[in-house]
Length: 176
Length: 176
DNA sequence: CGCGCCATGTAAGCAGTTACATGATTCC
DNA sequence: GGAATCATGTAACTGCTTACATGGCGCG
Image (tube, rainbow over all chains, first blue to last red; front, side, top):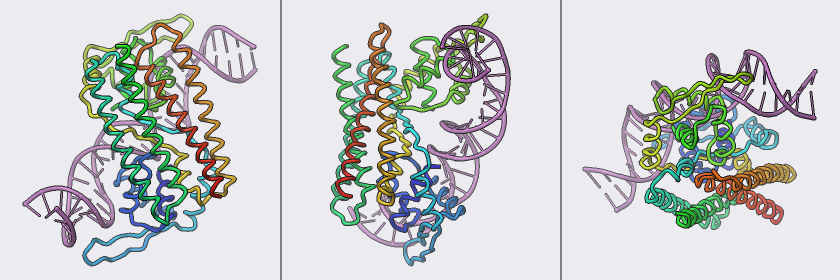
């Protein structure tokens, strides 16, 4: 049920198309939620059905037609209510790589190094992309506090992950 | 499909009951995966069906009977193969609270403070529990590298989260 | 007397993934 | 000529959650 509130939060800031919602979601919420375009389109239909959003159809000449979604009053109220009243739940993480970490003692050191290097490379890329986005974002007027806070979170998460990887590499090479 | 390898990793270290798997999972894997006893029992059945594990039934007098699971050769091979060959996937996070963060500009400051305090309290508890577990774990002989690494990860994650929360509180109070 | 621990499971429903499906335009 | 962007969706399946279900023992 939380995805719906993530999407409401996006549309609250300004009316957008489903396509925009997907784009904004992947840019700004990837650090703390995950979804796909197919789930997002389906959820938007359900939300409209529940009268939380409605849309205006915009006919375009060359580009395909689009639906611009806005929050209804019900939607606005429900979002704020949810944020204030709905109990917080501890974050749920699904991290493939850390499962592999649990069986490091049973893997050849070469393979462990390979895995760690791959993760470091991946996380390095994510971190630099996030920093670029943060910089770009800081140079616009419409930057909102919500995004400032969550982007900072994304950066800190990646930095923590990278530092842990480097510590792990060193630790493994010390005891081997 | 990753849950199955998390469970295989637990059973690999020593043969245990389903009940033990649940207990170990909740203590050691909560930092990077989430599941429930009902899903774990169901998955163990599927894994046995796929010949990755088998069990020995232990009849107990006063306590209920139990099934002690061990990895089969197929299970062992498949786990190692998975760890080395299966592509890494970026971590997926589902964090309720950070969705709320995105709409902070639309919430009363009192409510924002309440939310942040609640998260800080929660994360403080988790952190101190993890540190206790790490200390206890360091004082046994059978401590394995896998757990040393992932527990350290858990501590760093909570510390990062707490520091971010405190930064966010300050940031919000500066600009308000 | 009630709570927590040991120990196992099933069923129904909801959430999320992967694949399929279309099609014009713009840029290299 | 091919890839990326805009723009929307459905279907089948798998994964996950919540609730239901049982029951004895030990401890305070």
